[in-house]
Image (tube, rainbow, N blue to C red; front, side):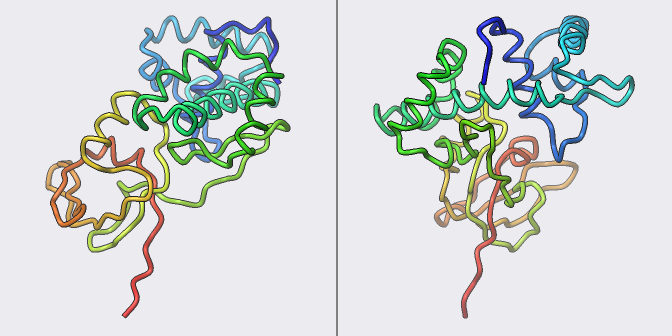
Amino acid sequence: MRHDSFNESTEMYLKTVSELAVADEPVAISALADRLGVSPVSATEMIHRLRDGGLIDHRPYKGISLTADGRQQADGVIRSHRLWERFLADQLALPWDQVHALACRLEHATDPQVVDALDRFLGYPATCPHGNPIPRSNNAAGVPSDHALAGIKPGCTVVISRIHPETDELLAYLAELGLVLGKRVTVQEYMPFHGPLVLLVDGDARYIGLEAAARVYVYPVEETV
């Protein structure tokens, strides 16, 4: 559960570290700064404050990771964000690629009691509109077992299961390509020299950059003869 004394900047740092962490591996300060749009110096200063507050572990030359307290704070913000996304998409019928930005404005201003009420009102949804699991009030969340599209072999057919971590620009880009949750796509080929990934979507070729494809997660489709 979040504490009112934690300001928006602190919450954004904790949330972003959680989003960037892969298999609990430390997050590079440069990656954190790039995602937040701040200088490495500014990021380092905030990291020192979070470390002094017992929210982050910082191992020089290795990266940063959340402590148990930091994880609890991050999960509270993530829960608020993803529930608001679900409310905006399901109850207000706002576009799939626009609810992320709106939820970013609401997540920090919502009291934990309101978050609990929102969760209850929505029927305790398992995921946000972009397929990512919503932590429950005890900060527990399921661990997805899907895989990044960027690692799928040519010839495989898959179904898009989630987008992570999502940004406004990425969601708009994917929506334009028709790459939304539940969409069935076939990987055709990887263009040479780190070129884009070529997908077959509804009978048409679509090209997606490898950086974006690394943030689109999929499940395999079992073909039947």
